[in-house]
Image (cartoon, rainbow, N blue to C red; front, side, top):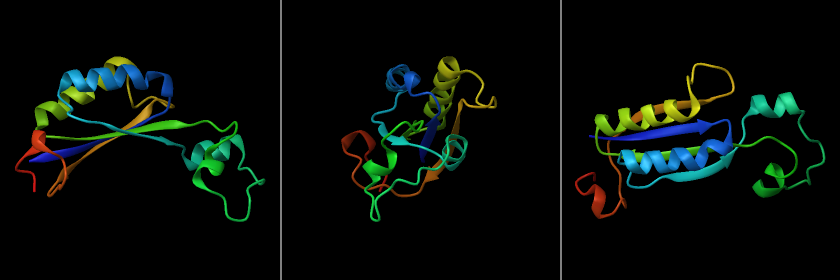
Length: 121
């Protein structure tokens, strides 16, 4: 079975080290998105200077605090555990506030992962 590992990282400065450790732990690829959460917007104050039809880039630019969302499909629970351990080594206890959120879901079908993930379809 394959698994989707998703990490919403509160402090983007940790991103590079986590990516390196994930690769060493067996993640064949990682997708990285800049993101922000509703709670952060509320703490900072929701901006009211958006155009009528804002682009996502316009919505996210400015002085708002951003997260990084990383996700990867991996081939085993052992790799999942290694990725979780890597995050804990860099970030610390995810149960603490303002660290991040990590979750894992089973992948029943994935198409387009390439040769490193044959047999997933």
